[in-house]
Length: 196
Image (cartoon, rainbow, N blue to C red; front, side, top):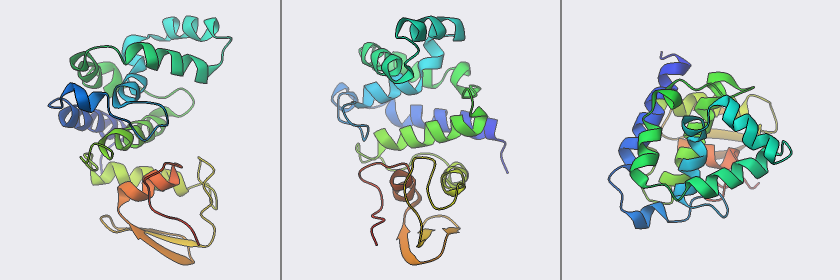
């Protein structure tokens, strides 16, 4: 069983490998994050590689400590970077070892897996990361109980990942790939249908 640190590093590397050969049209394609292209999502995902804590703190202060506003502003600015620079950021030692403030390495793993799917699924690349990472993120998403950390209602559902050895809950069966379940549990369009 891999450590969270090893899983995070491997997920960033796998995403870089998947995106590196793509042309500029793919980078400007819509992601599953409303209003963001693939480049926006990768820029957001790799902010820590370009903004050390002190610089990010200054950017945050400039926006009145509104994290969403800062995140959106920096993603819009940095989405204009060359794809090769964003791929290099995905491969950086900073991202491979970055622990999310307040979420630690588990938070970083969820971040890279979910945002990875936000770009690879619409590009028809599917899930490019490891089964172990996807299973760990599914475990995190359902851990709160009848609502995921994203507020998605899972009460009365029996969720089964068809490509992993994972089943959660009791009730109406919902069988889908790990990618489809992760997207649904993260509140994304394009995920498994959880309707009763």
